[in-house]
Image 1 (spheres, one colour):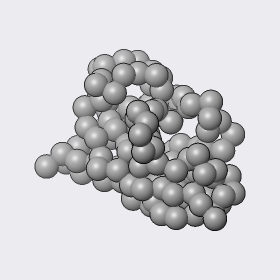
Image 2 (image 1 turned 30 degrees about the horizontal axis):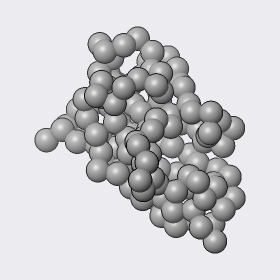
Image 3 (image 1 turned 90 degrees about the horizontal axis):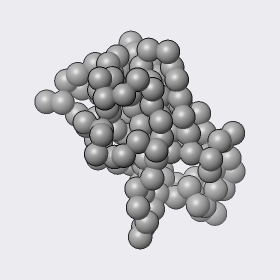
Image 4 (image 1 turned 30 degrees about the vertical axis):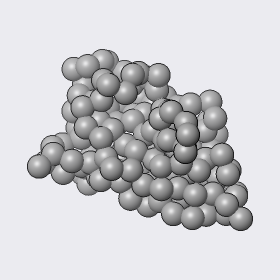
Amino acid sequence: QLQLVESGGGLVQPGGSLRLSCAASGFTLDYYHIGWFRQAPGKEREGVFCISPSDGNTDSADSVKGRFTISRDNAKNTVYLQMNSLKPEDTAVYYCAAAHITRWALCVISRPKYEYDYWGQGTQVTVSS
């Protein structure tokens, strides 16, 4: 069964940190761009960060630049989203998604969601004091 599983969400105080993981099973992430998205209540799902498989090209939303980083461990078939200096407005369900490398050469966070082939079930991140 091909699936992505997110983990690492939780409740954190403003200014705190969390590291989200996106683990793939049934397929290797070596051939997929990985995107992280988030959806807050009443809002559309938005792209946060993405990473390409080979050269590590990344792209991110302006709202997280300088606070979030993305990395991948191909040996563990996992992509990580390190979130620092968290703010209440970062509260959302965070999803990871995979798009095969044949779809485009470089990941760009503005790529439409329908171009992603697989999605995880999401993990809740709540930033509150």
